[in-house]
Length: 177
Image (cartoon, rainbow, N blue to C red; front, side, top):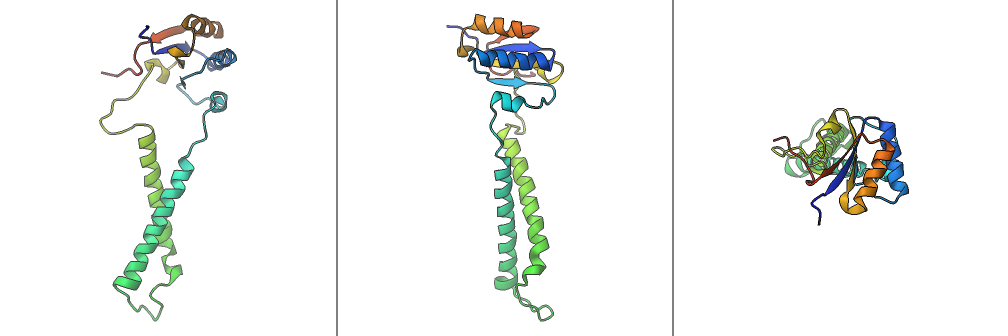
């Protein structure tokens, strides 16, 4: 039994990497992940990445913010300490629209930041998860689970596609320490 967990194909050019993805998918080899130093348009569709659920989180957080503001205003101005201001009713809805909007935006922003940090495991004190250090600088990396198929076949497919280096990792992530 081999200790190899991942096979990494390192490419210099994004076009070669995209060609490598095509070759691997033609041979029914599943790709664990792709790491690039810059965004590449269309790669999500090619890899079958699902659409983000961040808009749903934004809607839920914004709704909670709006309901919180609305209920606080109602409690303070109608139940807790009703005041007669210029003969207006205690709860004049148009007066409270701006603060309700601001709370909606505030809760939405903080909720999305919290969801982003939670989803990407960016907690304070946590070491960054890196599979290949050069993926942030000048290399395009395709990571393949070593249990996905024949390792020699995967190596040859990556080399045919233009990989300048094929590495076998025995760990999931590297650390900077």
